Structures are given as structure tokens and as C-alpha cells.
Length: 97
Image (cartoon, rainbow, N blue to C red; front, side):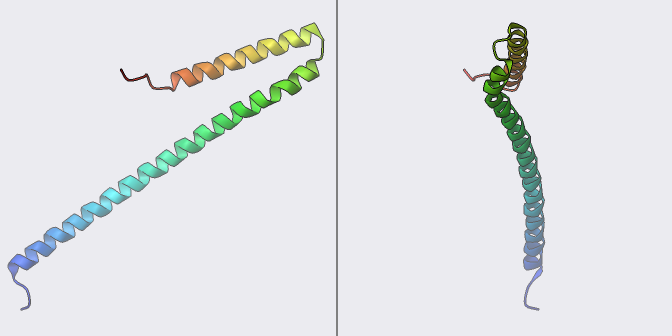
């Protein structure tokens, strides 16, 4: 026989280690997939905020000089900025000392 019991035991251990490596690889890949999904969701939120901000000049132009339209626009912008600021603050980790 070209290998002994010691060799067989080492092969069994090696097979277990390879199995562990493969299991860990699957967990890492799943974590990467979760991270990618989170980044995509964040990108969507950021893109929405950019669209909102870039649209403000057009909203101001559309309101013209009508005081009621300008007041409504100001109220809307204030509410949306407050909501955006609150969301950013709620999802920003505290600074480490």
C-alpha cells in the first residue's frame, strides 16, 4: 500500500479543513452580497436627495414672485431638509473618542 494510516488521517484532516474553507467562503460571499445590497440602497437614497436638491431652482422659478407659492415652497423645502438631516443623523455612527 502506498500510504499508511497516518497518511489517511492527515488526508481526512485536510478534507475537513478544505470543507471549512469552503464554508467560510460561502459566508463571506453572502456577507459581500448583503453589503452590495446595502450600498445599492444607500446609492438610491443619495440619488433621490441629489434629485431633490437639484430640482429646487426649478421649483423656485415656477413659484415666481407669488408669496403664497414661495411660502409653500419654503415650507416644503424646510420639511424635506429636516427629514433628510434627521435620516442622516439617525444613520451616522457616533464619533469614537
